[in-house]
Every structure is written in C-alpha cells, then in structure tokens.
Amino acid sequence: MKVAAVNSWSVPLNLANNLDEISGNLHKLNNLGIEYALFPELSVSGYINSPELLMKYSPQHKSTIEFLKSLSTKLSIVFSVGLPMPTNGVWTIAQLSFRNGKIIGSHHKTHLSVHEKETFVSGIKLQLIELNEFKMGMQLCLESHFPELSLYYQKKGANLLNFAFASPRETTKEKLERFTMFLRARAYDNSCFVMACNSTGKTPSGKNYAGVALIISPRGKIIAHAKGCKPSFCVANINLNEISEIKNSVMSNFPAYRNTQLNMTFNA
Image (tube, rainbow, N blue to C red; front, side, top):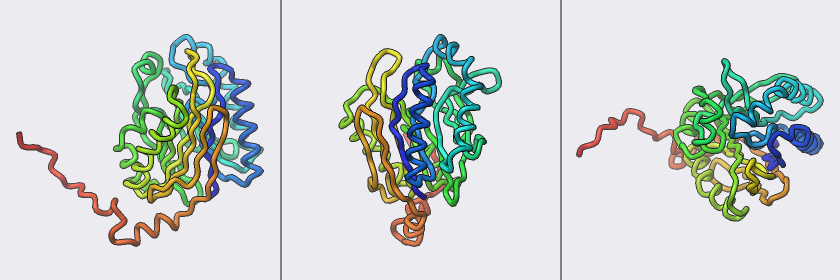
C-alpha cells in the first residue's frame, strides 16, 4: 500500500485555509497514486485548547464534516484528519478517517494534557481501522508516550500504527530526533509499520510548529521522512511481507514471546 504522512499548515479557526490546505494535498497525493494519507492532530480546526475557541468552532462543525465527506467521494485516496467532535453532549479531540463519502474510523483522544482537559473529555475506546490488508491503530500526540496503547493495538491485530501530532516548540532537528527515538521503538517492539506527522503553522499563543513526518518499518528503520517549518509530506510503499518475514523468524518475532501470565506483585 502506498501511504503518505503529511505535515499540513494549520491555523486555529481558519477553517477555509485549513480545508484548502488539506484538499490541495489530497489532490496532489491522489495523483501520485497514494492510497492512504495521515494528517496531523486537529489539522482541520487548527489546535484548539480553550472553551472560547471551541465555541467559535462549533457552529461550523456540521458543514465541515459534510465538506470532508464530499471531498472523499471525489478522490480514491483514504485519509485521516483531526478536528473537535461532539460526543454525547461533550467534545473530544478526534481523528476521523474518510472513504467514499463515509467516516470509516473515529478515534477519540484518550490521554489529554492539562489545558486540553479544561475543554475536552477523554475518549475511552480504541478502534482498529481496516484498509485493504492493513489494520490501523490511531494515537494522538500525548497518547504516543504510553507504549501500552501500541501494545493493545498490536495484540488486537494492528500492523500499522498511526501517530498524529500537534506538537509545538523545538527545532525541526530536535523534534525529528525525539520522534525518531521513541517511534522506532513502537515499530520495532510491536513488529508494526509506523506513520507519524506533525502540524506546521502557529499555536493559539503564536508558537511555531516544526513539521516532522516519518514512516518506519516493522524492524524500526526509517523508510521515509520529511521535516521543516513549511508544509511537506513523505511517501512510502509498505508491504505486509515485511511483517510476515518477522513472524516467520524464530528470533525476530518478539511479540510472540510475550508472557501474558505474569504476576505483577513485587517483593518489598
């Protein structure tokens, strides 16, 4: 499957700009034969972390969803984008996946930062998204720092782990080094492909985003990357044969050796 991780430009509440950016990237990627594209956390709305900003976004939510559904009918590419989502009378930070006019996956961020908790509620479910032979597990920004989420997805059959970020500060070099450090471990330990991307643009307080996109093999090797403070993307062909080779190797298939019967009681 040919995939792309996109560092799109995102401005808080400038939905016209953000949707135009997403649409332009999708048309370009569609022409390149990309089958799946991952966009950053809150890439549609821009990063929102206050009730005031959410109130300004909410009247535009329904029309935004309809635009994205319509866009997905005009392209063969499947894509995942981030936006606030109303759920049972409250709002979550969501990553929605679109194909042929429908939402085929809806991930609601399970681990929120201090300021995000003032505006949003945490999701409580994890969902696999099936695309061709791939089963994808989604994680948003802070969630990436909890290895048990990747392990849970892998145990449920995931072979592609997707990480969408809206991570500010740091230079592109610093962010690439940090993302590489722990995301390669997520891939290697779980024998899964990993895709990751970060926003470019500005935070509500004017901080810069350093765009970093990565695609990592199930052996923990970087097979494509892009970085910079301007929009960019990276592309790779990923093949499940790489995971099959690991599973057929006695010494490389680490997930097969997990002991799930451990007694987690420790002596003082």
